[in-house]
Image: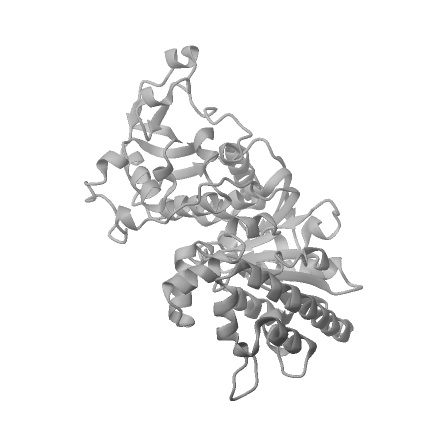
Length: 460
């Protein structure tokens, strides 16, 4: 058994949850210490932003579920297509492939083929699906794997990302957070490692590794998985670190647990006026839950859905325009109010009608949002505008940062069927009328997904 292994992924199925779980289990039979995972550039071209996000999550979820202690490191530069995805290959490395060597064509040069490791293993994932005995019992069948979009999208990139934490005894939760930060980093990453008074309230703080050791471990991991990024690993003794003074930092990466700290940083950077966060995402993606969490930490929430309801009220300009455009059929005969269910059936099956509705309602909603902002400027420093249509309506320039939440399409359909009592067909029609997850992520500064299972492992 080799101490180090390099797993090169070439097949689409390898990036799925069941695929990477299977491959890691098999890799444990050949590698005992460190396993580097590199994704072939031809495969990266096929992956959307959401595909990559899910793959990172699945990889470190599967890693922390392994029976043996295997240090899994996903080579981020291969996902960004900026590095040599064969750089960890040497005669002592066990090379693992998810296909036959003959299928790789000219992947290895003639010279490289002469110096391939003696230990080379082909892991035929698709051919071995029938043998499921070695997989964890919680796995689903291969047929239930999520569907992927074919159109590739570019990851949102920032020049200088900052994050911070304790990072005591590197584990998969830490790796996950650092990997996400690297994925979004174009040039530079600054990571603050807490020390001194920041550790006072930590449980068993006397057992925490020395800060120099933690800095070295974090730097080694980041260098291992993406040497293309310039690093600045610094000890910090307050929750702000260098982020409060360095104007070049254009993105803060953090987990749910560090949301309050992020808000404090943003507050300190914008004392003269409210710092406005535009919170967006598809229907049923969990925006309201995130808004509740941010409100708990002192942010003021403006709910554009509620404002939209107000704009539909009888005797308003929007009400009159809607009735003139769509007819009296959209009016509830008992209450005299707009029947949103009836209106929804009309517009979500007709793109032209939806466009007419948006042109009537969106300007009024933005006008009411501005009115609310003007009335609270003296009282609130952080304002969150929760708006599903934020990007579609072109309101990005109205906010300081765009934060987005998203869930897989099939999960959104399930929620709409259960929560809104829609048919599956109606649910998909509504989702298809919105921006895709890829488009939302591409236009956002901060992205949140249901990563709670991994975040719970991060002690920041």
